[in-house]
Image 1 (tube, one colour):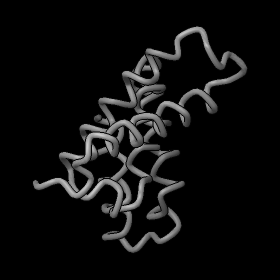
Image 2: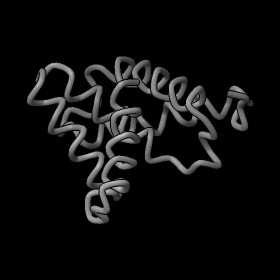
Image 3: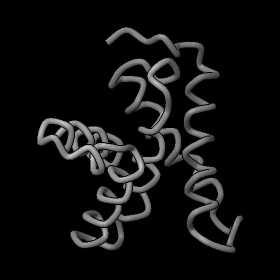
Length: 114
């Protein structure tokens, strides 16, 4: 969940500083993951997953409650895939993020009220 909000705040802050190349979702995800890896390598994976979830369209995750819920569900997906997709982190993390967004969408509250 922290990775999702960190990505959004980084993107917003870079935009306010008039740094357009850093205000992109891709740069914000990279910065979030790099900072998390420097702070604690153990949380880099979950931070990346949360930041991938935050890349979802605003029409899919309409507010912070939806973002937090989808991020939490993506953690469930990541843990559930333990032992699967062993070829590399990227595929497993992206798949976990996708699963979190799909699971949240299946709850029927995609328009969520803040």
